[in-house]
Length: 300
Image 1 (cartoon, rainbow, N blue to C red):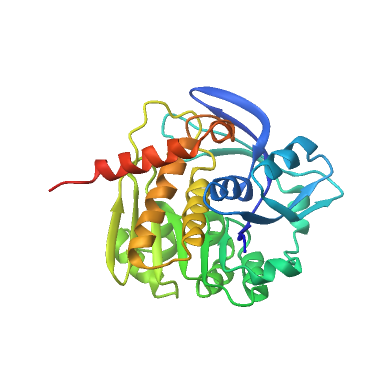
Image 2 (image 1 turned 90 degrees about the vertical axis):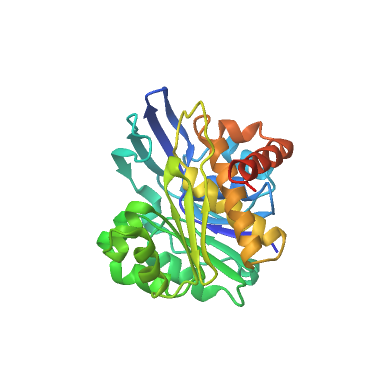
């Protein structure tokens, strides 16, 4: 059974201090599913417009991604335009056009309902809840979110969080959700909402995983070239859930390895715009970087 990835599919225009691209493939569902596909087969649930290019569908199929849950509706695909300053941890939004994303009803194809490992990408928490209710017997559900939903759909978001095993969010979002500046205390408050595990991403400073077994700290990979941070968090999430699905696991050591694989994949995607780096990524590259991560934090 493929790993189920739910989220947005979009067309992005991005400017960073190192370059600029227009009308490139993006969205949480895209980054997460492509990243997942290096570990396990992925199926996606999202919506696009009639302007969605055939080459994009061909690209997804080249990664053996099940697109039967990708619905094409009249209208235009979700579009996002933004930029980054040298403070690369946060994007500045210039324009957001939801377009057909407003008609995303999240009804699952029948064979999706048997999915065991599910990644709910950053999207309306009401959609996340609707998906969860359709899954028959999940083994692990991971949820991602952002400050917009914390500020505008707090009650629905907390309900969604109460229904999942793991939540992934960045440090600013964790502080805002918990109303707590200290990340250790914030993670504890978020765990009280329901999830067993809280993963807090800290951009260039790595990430922290909080669980009943304690705290696991993963470093960030020290890159010389960072072109575009867009999709890094979704890439992390896709690899994280994909690895766990591949090994049919969720114990503490498997979770730690999943965090490292997620961090490794995120370190690749930021090396170029959109999916450009992923298109020539090989398993040997991933394995080498995984061991480089291990060496970064190993000592006697």
